[in-house]
Image (cartoon, rainbow, N blue to C red):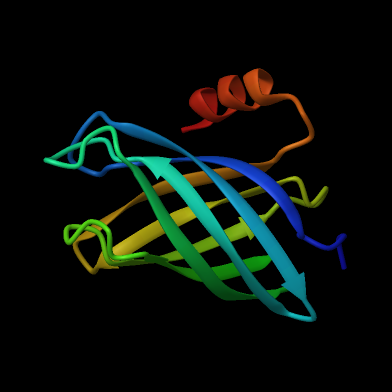
Length: 129
């Protein structure tokens, strides 16, 4: 099994009906097959635009399959919880997959393990999604 996922990750998700990409930071903690952690991102739309949104993560890892629920802290009534399902790369440095809030509202995401190369990560994320 690839290495433990505990650490700082940089990510990006896309909206399905808009040409919009949102960068986010995540801290993951892996214990056995359980994942927990937190995220922060800048709100891209609406009355909260520009505010930082915070969320907690709770999920599982089964080999290379990663699933978690991101639950926002309630500071914005528009944002609640989002389901994520992705595949971990063989090097355990990337997680790529889909997020969904309902059967009709979903998009793609990519997370890259941070190791001090923020600009390189941002470039790679934008090229992939």
